Every structure is written in C-alpha cells, then in structure tokens.
Length: 265
Image (cartoon, rainbow, N blue to C red; front, top):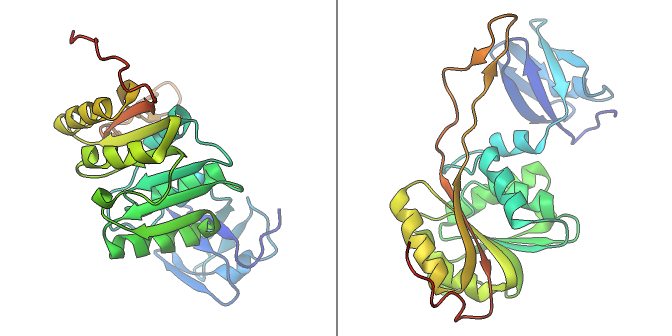
C-alpha cells in the first residue's frame, strides 16, 4: 500500500522509540536522532524506511488501533487496550450499534468504540468538563473517527439524550451515579460496562446495577505480563501492566422483580 499525504504512519526508530505522525509534504518532525521530513514517506510503502538528516533510519509502520489509542494527547488517565479489548468483547459492540460513553476523558476508548461501530453505528460520548471534551474531540479527529462520534457536555445526573441504545460504558470517579441514567438509556437486553480502580467503587456500582434492573453482573480484572524472549534465557519482564481497574458488566432486563428472592451467600 502506497503512503499518501494525510495518511498516519508509525515511525519506529533504531532504538525502539515510536512516533505516530500524519504525513504531509514539507512537514519536519524533530527527534532525538535528528529531524525527519515526513514528506519523504509519500510514495513509499509501509515496511520501508525514511532517514533523518543525521542518516538515522525510521521504519514506516501501519498504525494499529492500539497505536492510535496509546498515542493520544492525555489530560486524563485512559482505558488501556487490555481493558478496552475485553469491554468490546463482553458487551458485544459491533458495527451498526449505538453506544453511550459516560466520561470521554482523553478519547482513547472513544477511538476504540468508533472503530467498532463504524461505518453505520454511532458513539455518543459525554463529559462534564469542556477541556476534556475538546481534547477528546481533537484526538478522535486525529485518529480519523470524527464521523462516528457525537460529543456532549453534560453532568451525568442530567441523564442522556439517547434511548434504546445497545451499550453504555461508564468511566467515572463515582460510576454508581451514572447507573440510573444508563438504565433509562439502555434497551432491554442491552449491556453496561464500568471501570473502577478500587474495591469500594465496585461495591457501590454493583449495588446500583442491581437496583436498576441489571442481571448477570460480574467483575473482572485483567493483568498483562510481557515476556523477554532470548535464546535459552526467556523470562517475564520485571515490570508489567498490572492493575489498571476492575471491569464490571451487567445486562438490562425489563422484569424488575427478577431476583427479588435471591439471598446473600
């Protein structure tokens, strides 16, 4: 595939550093290995290289969804790809669905949602802070997904404009406060997901989900450990992406008395 002006490329330096850049004639990008002219990428293919003015090579790699998420400009913590992947699978988000994101943050997960629902679905992302929302809007636009996202400035207590949506994802400091609004917005059989870093947040969220007519509630933690692979001495890296948050999932039912006789274990 030939690289054109406006395409995104992931530059990989000889010492393993990566830079997500948009190709433009005349645009020069400064690096620790010298200035790189991004116009040099035009007409090349992914997998080839361009060189800095110091003669250092930079491989031209095709950006993945993970690259686009991890390279956003951050004003907040983001939902990491390891958690994002499980949310997408557990909630069944796919093309054509309508999804509410409560807490746009820096827009990293908004990118993943838009990628999943495109080309015929829609993401409605809410945040109470205008600076967060505008930063998320820029990040989503830079990743090429603006056409699939509506950005809304709103406190969660005011509720959502949409109804009969397929999924609501909650990423708030007090996620239980978003559950009643999520319950009103989700269709019967729809799903909810919440990410929280602490146990007490999970406990309050689960209680709120039960009150609001959600069932099949479960909470999961995802840990990822990389491997240092070398001949005859492969072992895990000393550092790992461990606790980022607890993921809680639930499904909306319309029979409110369901589980009324359930007893505590």
